[in-house]
Image (cartoon, rainbow, N blue to C red; front, side, top):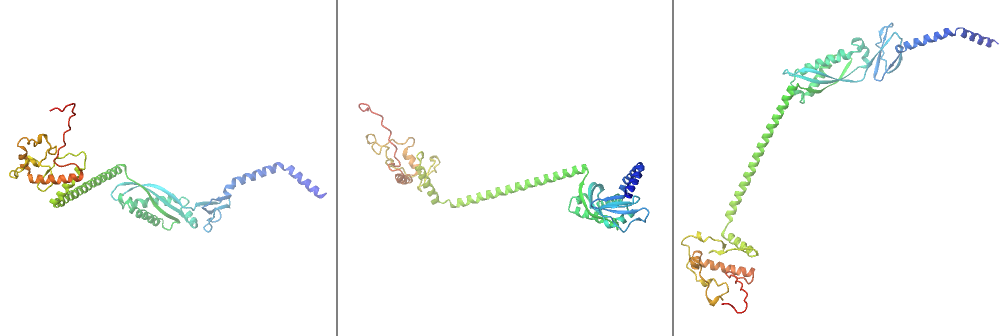
Length: 370
């Protein structure tokens, strides 16, 4: 009975205060919703937090909040720092040692020391990038670039330039809890007129080199022609020295054999005193070299001595056979003809040097005409 009375009394109390309870839970829910972002703090990966206690001593220098979810009082603040390595690229207008204006793209990699973020918060703040990194980088780039010329930025010295910028930034930051990991020169851009002038200069230099190569090529061709000419001259000297009489006689015999073996060859051969087959110019004979005339019987008739009525062939026109043989030399002619006769007999049996083919006889009808 007592339990039923207690339950009935609780029910009556709830029924009588139902509206009040509704407004109470509604108010608590609103308060929780409003205070949740300031009370429940989530730290993302790679970040750390520094706790600032409004009523209990300010910045907590002894504790670094790691990544995860943390509860704080709503009136306190948890400052977050990105402890990961960051890289940024910036463009700077710098003057070289000769007063030329350059546009240089420089990238810097940096990150804060996670264990020193409370000091960084109290000394510099969360905006240490704008207060430390960018001004220090700009000053270092302009200061170092002013000691070099534009050619140095395109050569191996550019590595030394970026190392000097890095060292200058580290020295300027001093004991600040920020680590500058690397400084890199990304790009160097010259003013457009200077760039055009450099390109024109490069084209002119290449043209000069090309012309020089053409000159060298012409010299080499000239040397080759000189060597060829010298080779021809030496060859001719050697050939002229070896052009002896036996060699020429042997060459003449070989040429005669080659001509004799050709079915289409026609030649006029006159023997000299050395027995070589030569083609001579009778009009160019030297005066006083003629030998005594030879008898005409040395040249047999074309029909083998069976001419008409046994008569000898008619003499040569002009100064005659005797004058012709007188200019040439009967002895050498006779000897050459004999040699050629033996040669032709060996090559073509039935052919005799000095013989002329008999003309074909016309067909006879009936009685032979006189």
